[in-house]
Length: 308
Image: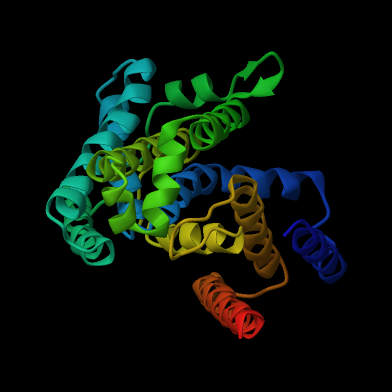
């Protein structure tokens, strides 16, 4: 993945004189903030054998809540709480449908996608929520010991999840469920609790992503988050997390997000319309999954020959 990122940077630098600049690098990093946080939650979901295709619209609803707080003259600290809180509540809704309701994750979250999308339209009344105060923007534009707040938040989030995966029973339970939910249940692992908690954690991370989105753009448009779920799934799969569950890579997710944003940014600079970005993302997903399927089949054949 690192080699792919470097190769893409070199190719786009040759193709466009505007690519290899500090300003463009800052743009790529800035455009990666929300996807890094949402991708972290998607990594946990896929590692568990789950998925959430409504995650982009969840960010939209959290962003609306933040915008309403700011628009009403609320304290920016209250706006900081509003995003993660709404994300957690919607994560509970998703977990209730998928985990407690025993609806397959892809089906349940597709249904919620339609519900949430309508909710966004109703709450916005068919108009953008724009011209928001800059109080939240100013708060999150500060630095702590010279480190920008977005970078610090992302670093803390990834470190916390890494510790949870590697140093707590939660990580072992999550990967065990991803490998085989039935075997995990028979082993005494609290499957329902772990799955429910993971959807809520993903919702909280999405709410934090919404906070940074509103702080950056100071508006909420009707189409907010429409392609975020696809981008998150692509980045996580590119990073080495198995869509079938049981395996994940946090550093892989970071590199997957960066590669995706590098490609999208580079394509725009060389004149490819943004309309084609989802096409590129979809091709990447199909290519990685196809490669994984072929690799797994090859390994299975090799194992069978070894034991023959």
